[in-house]
Length: 213
Length: 214
Image (cartoon, rainbow over all chains, first blue to last red; front, top):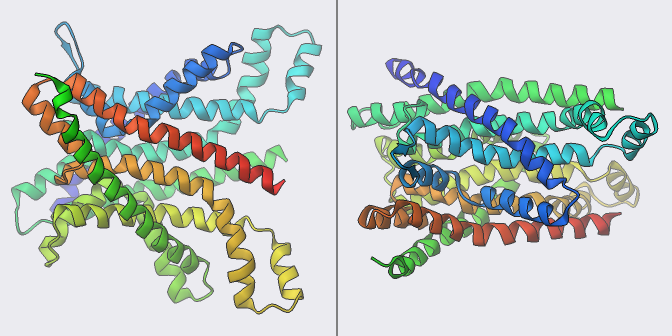
């Protein structure tokens, strides 16, 4: 039982890394989404390539690149900084794609109606299209958040003391007797976090699709 | 020190990563399909264990699965080398994720197909095996392709249980040359060169399949 307590000590850090990198991605995804929807073909293709490259590099490589490789003058990332920025950059790319998907499913009539009412381009986008697109993107963003909770475990490889790092440390301090329990404890905590989130996401999805119909 | 001299070492690592990918995808999809059939089964003794395995497998980080297999199982007498441990752990994760995709594919087959097949007098077994399953598998192809690409990227986690795959080789090279930025940038590019064209291919296949169904 002691094991659960020790693993739980890492939980706040798991949640912090997840929340911070999701927030990073929710904001960073906006300019990328604008690029993916640009009227200029060159911009669109360039941003598409950037998004695909970001997603093509494994998370652990991103974190090592930032943690060990990144330096401007005397500035270097801390473990936590590298984890949040690394996972945040990756989240930006994934969320940009989901935002774009949200816009892609909007009926054309929305744009036409807004223009017919004499709304400006900016107002049409911010007040009419964006809120509806965001709504459509919400369930997939929630699913992504659940994946991100699990991916935050990779932060342990650059020295962030979250749940998996806490479990590893405990297992190393008690060799022989505690090989399995700390990792099973960590696994149990992930399951306990994921299940309610999965149920909430499913409800959200059902509610949104019901009100759309 | 010229980094080009280290490219063969990275190539060796890539080979190991690809081996892990092939093993975990082939074995994982086979087990995943079995899980999906189990979850769809009317027998509760099959359905519940399959459902629990799938849900647990999807909610535990792959890294934790690897640690359980490599560091945890020895304490109950199961000792695996790092490569088989990585293959087993990744296979389990891939199986859990793919079973959801198989399940969604099978569920996407319109009910009319089953009704029509039954009306034609086909047995329940051939209705599923000959009519529903082939169509379900077809619509599961695009997500399964995406999962295969993610599995390839996921093999980089095997670094943490000291499998000599691409990421481990990169780590060793960077520890010798101190050229962290360059080494990880090249490594990232190697992953990209494989993952990005594969992603484009899967998008192409998805469009083709969608066209065929319309």
